[in-house]
Image (cartoon, rainbow, N blue to C red; front, side, top):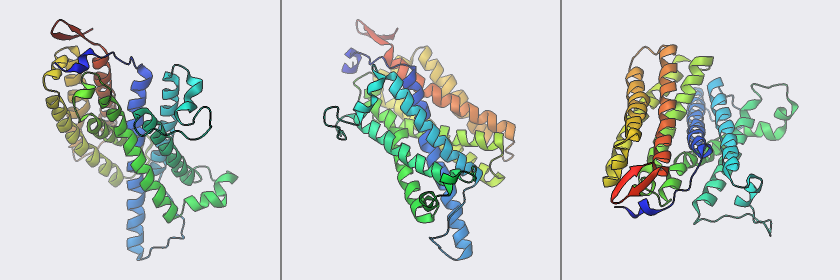
Length: 325
């Protein structure tokens, strides 16, 4: 039996569960918005036969909303982490030394690395949001200032997109890595948890953008079709990684021979992966079908994190048999 079964649970609350879910959406929504933004810019420059670095770019509505979603998501994530602290008003102690006022970074502590990662991603998602906000709020004087106009130029915009994407993907996968370094059953018994959360974050991020695009009519058919294609392939990858994750648990996987396993099978695999995947295979992407499919993907992503987090929290040992409370 794994020695992780004899460690005390950290008793994380639903605030952490929501952080895991929203953080994954925010990180991958930024990546997808950047891909759509710069693929469009590259295509335009290729057709024009020029690469004018001094010309300010414009972003389509779905790209702007993708950046907005990332920024709002990272703000909510920080708030959720702060609320979960025993002393929320001391949240800044994760970043600043109490006595010296100097930045505090501990590379050997996952919580410290995650706090800085969240702050860095928040910075780049804020800059990306600021760079496109003027297109929705053209009358705000601040958004017409020289520094903000600089953010709209291809050079700085590309730097923000690349570094923000790296930070966003880190946040999406970091939550799984954080669990993996916690000496608890299920969490510490596989090296695939970070990858599983990253792939799941990619599917939920795409689903969130599909939901926005179809509900608010923010994108053309080609863009929506690309998002659906991306989501369909990531869902298949998520299923494969989930199977590999369960296999890698070995005998520890027997903890899912319970209602947690039933929820994993029906809620995550069935409703959250297989049903949306089958729906998205249709060549005719009707808005109502896409919205229902995207909603199921989001539900499946949330349930995945709930099963992984709470099933380990409720494990205890009776003799040589492992059960759930």
